[in-house]
Length: 374
Ligand code: PMP
View 1 (cartoon, rainbow, N blue to C red):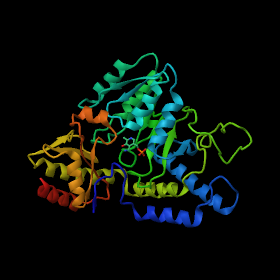
View 2: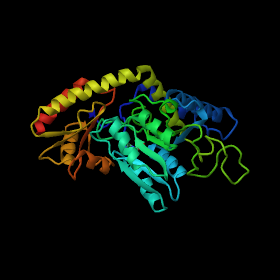
View 3: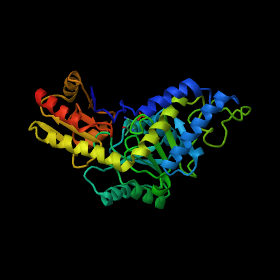
View 4: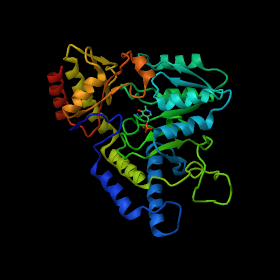
């Protein structure tokens, strides 16, 4: 089977990740922070090591400001609902996933308003102009994806961060598609909160994500419950991470995330980029050789390539590819707004998501299978 659905989740994991998860379950999986015995302490130590590694890699500068969540969606909900309230205004990009749009839509019922700024086809200056034009005195947060989940457009986060800083607005970044692909430094880019998944390009397993909080970014907790410390009061502890981490953490998934992050660090983001861009360019060249295929925003080179056959609906093409042993994803990819911005038809399009563990031979095989189908 050839797996080209890495933008949804990476399926082929480095062996070190599988081993770390298994070792954790076998030897370290006490309840972290909920006991003083050796097995509980082993779990807590593994979790702290992962906090430190994430803090280091993403320029947070404070391991305790790394908050573990279930996934990116959970992290975004915590950041968005934790800072926006009645009367606030927010800005989002036109490339947002429903993980950003739906929490904001839910907040709209509570008196939060938001506007959408354009991105597709624009350079950094034009994107910043679009943001400036939509700012209001009530704008409290700008929430944006770093990299689209349906094409390889990425946003100029450093420039957006500088503008948000100048205007006193919080910047919440959805790094679902960029963590493990693009360099990110929270302090350097002036990001207030960064939401990321373990299970995509950081090669961890499902069940874990993280919200990284800058100094001064202290959203309201989304959940209340046991925190393992300070059990007597009826309110959550004041300090991160316990303030936000109610209930038992997914220790095996966190152990896997640490191993995945170490894999990414050892390969290096430059090498990861070199590999995924080479796969992208090879696939783009092959797809462009078909008269009946349409590609969307394919000048933006990266790890995601979106296309359609002019006569075959995207879901049917994906199903046929699956029967031939190639896993891709079709439809709207939980991002109907982004599909509209790219001009795909109502049925969406077919997405290829590359990982540094894919090979050029797999792109050759995709081409042969597509030729047969088309
Ligand atoms: N944002 C973007 C841009 C995504 O691609 C995804 C995953 N499809 C999410 C958010 C949600 O991620 P998760 O499944 O980890 O909640």
